[in-house]
Image 1 (tube, rainbow, N blue to C red):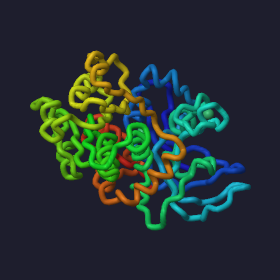
Image 2 (image 1 turned 90 degrees about the vertical axis):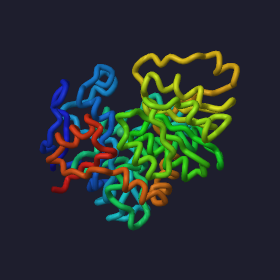
Image 3 (image 1 turned 120 degrees about the vertical axis):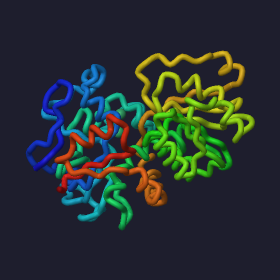
Image 4 (image 1 turned 180 degrees about the vertical axis):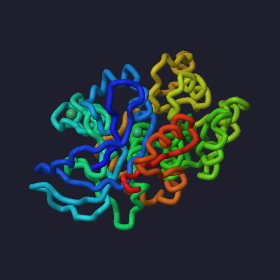
Length: 347
Ligand SMILES: [Zn+2]
Ligand SMILES: [Zn+2]
């Protein structure tokens, strides 16, 4: 069968190749992949960043894809309660299920975790066999391409509903106008935010326009002072904020825009030192909260949300390309000329 794989431990080398068909084991589900999303993690794998290479250390050829969905084609021994032909989203996290964190429902913090598409073979293939525990069956009529964006939607769901919960009537600030930032916008609106402010830079003009279309108030930080712009909407400052940019300057920009006692979730991974003044943080009792991926329970909420947000999610999927055009998919991603790019095994 065909798959998108990285073939060497060096920059580049991501191609469509033939790999062996998956073998369906007990307690597993065989999926016919309907599509997979690409994100910054895939770009880092493509560049073969040193930290990624050290952490993931996959076997080559390494099949990519941690954001994917598919149709259930067969059930392994011992799997019950799932219907052949149903569309399902998949959590790519292979948790140990036994550590302190797994036992306390904090799967994001599992000490023995590996991730399909990162450490283990991923879902950018015609078929994949995955543990039945990782499968979340979607309601009838779900859109197979939108199913591929449920993984990043689950990241936003974890931050907005679980780690830094937003209250009805709150004002939220989202740093970053990429797909993850706009997914935070959608979840915050669904959770009853009075207003959501999405902050970007001049280069994000197209993305900020889409954010406005999806109901955000937007700020271009290259031409406007963020804290002042936020206070025009929320005179005390934003109640909650989420950094979906991972930019080293995001914390210093967002903290003054937060009200006293406000909470800021750090979602984007910043690989540099991010300087900010700690005194206002202490005096105003603001809180910085780490947000990592999701727990298993988060998927139950996000798969339900995906149905409610179908029309909005459709606007985030700007490109759907066949596996054969994987180079083009990565070029779009690299140039940020897209929101979400979904690739499909079909021609
Ligand atoms: Zn991703
Ligand atoms: Zn664990």
